[in-house]
Length: 416
Figure 1 (tube, rainbow, N blue to C red):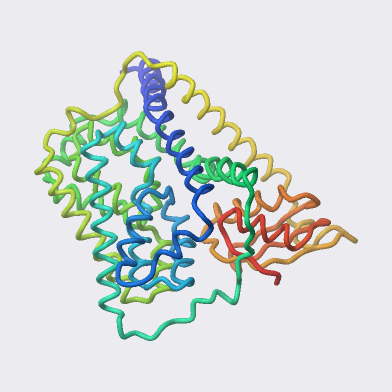
Figure 2 (tube, rainbow, N blue to C red):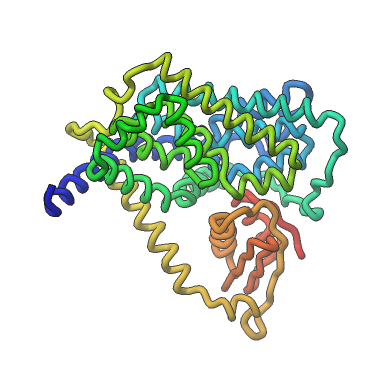
């Protein structure tokens, strides 16, 4: 394959992947925004009481589109609001593996049997880890989980506020993973065009368990987005990797990374962390092997299908491309306009507001808080720091408005 021909094939594969991904990704994001706006404030947290708390946490967490980063403050928040250790761990285990967007995209690329099996496996892993943690820590003393006394600012949003929250939440889901989406689509197209089929078929000779262990070794320490990584998994399966190994990749990867492991250890202790990781490893490998036995020859039915696109697929693809370009330009503008010296010390004579922010676990979280605060009327500049969690706001802005903005971004804050 010459360079020109290779790039032409790469472009075709890239376009076909976008056509498969865009409609379901946008539908999932809209559904997530609607759920976020319609559910009463703290609805999920109020349900996690009694002996069925683990089941409720897992069942309610499965459709939520939270990645392995975004689920951390949500899981810690459940625990701080009175949920059991097991309910919080079950939520942390199952939620990042699925989500309405991930389920729809998985069905589009890998088929409904795979998507449904992935949901069931996520439920099983969440229930197993949650119940095991509750049993193992029943007699352990309760840790201090007050997060330095930070209390969320609460309000009762009206209809217009709810619509605004839905749109903001749907866009924030896409914005939080847009780099991974771009990376995933590019890598998927590259795998389809440039990776020899014989190399991927070699993974098949390892068998479902051997290939699953290889996928597990790659996915455990890394950040893997449950939705954006589906095209990569589909390309690997189409090339010859066992579908069971792809299931391991899409279960263990989204539910773990270095940040998640550290947060679980810090918030729940070493015993809970061991159960959390052990359950994920055992259940994902077992699910991968079982899926290969129950649904064989998935590779022949999987992959990006080149067919005449529908009008809806074309509109969704162009819309997604426009959103990705908007996110890229917005992030670049924010980076170029940032003046660390001015933001840190404030403009001479300008009022400043210092907040403590709880729940941030990565640079994506700090960017979300920064964008939310910059939209508040009167704000001229914002500096958000991950460690310690804080935000320094310059401008003529009220404390209540700033607290409300942080809350709507999904975090908790108080005046420093």
